[in-house]
Image (cartoon, rainbow, N blue to C red; front, side, top):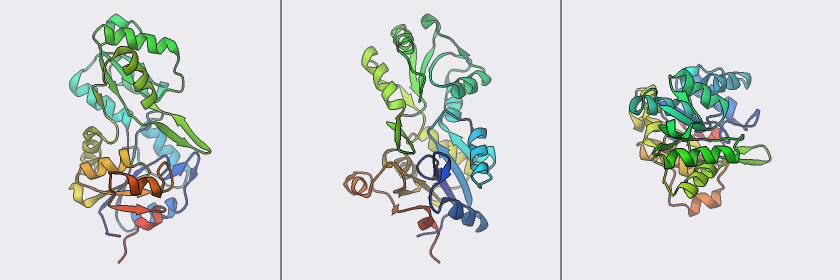
Length: 259
């Protein structure tokens, strides 16, 4: 295993599953820090704030500053502030995302004819009424963005349907393709993490359990990409995929550089 200056980790299915660290994750990240390496965390899941993710990592024995966590809701706020500051939004998403957008100066509304953009996200409170409002708003001219396009979120014992299902529902009824997805594997997320690290991409390695998000984003951005087999992707799937990771590892312990 080559040595890198920065190690970027996905969270769900990579560092932990539910409320427990995955095997070797804690000791590996601790050892990398002791070696003077940057360790930062990246998640497509918008149901927690950066602060909440940092608090969870601390509870699991990995104290981490809020600033070393980036998630898709943080990137969405930045994306919208650059393009549609103070826009009126309809959010198909949970309270955490709604709170972050409100705090950033956006107005949330359910009046379809006042919506500038519909934001689709992971939403375990999804009901038909939300689909109707999104449908009406987009047909009235609202733009259409999403925090992430994961098909499911890994949880102990299986998974939960994620934002891809809601994007598909809105696209199907409106016959409108989503304009941008800001989470992994997008360039928006890659730019956010490289901006935080302030170092060349080739000195960084992105590690995650999904080829189509974690690994693809890292490779497209010029980083190394490591697929860990602790989450959503099996070795058989990886071998058959068109996406070729720099490394395939059984667990995070294999990231430790060989000297």
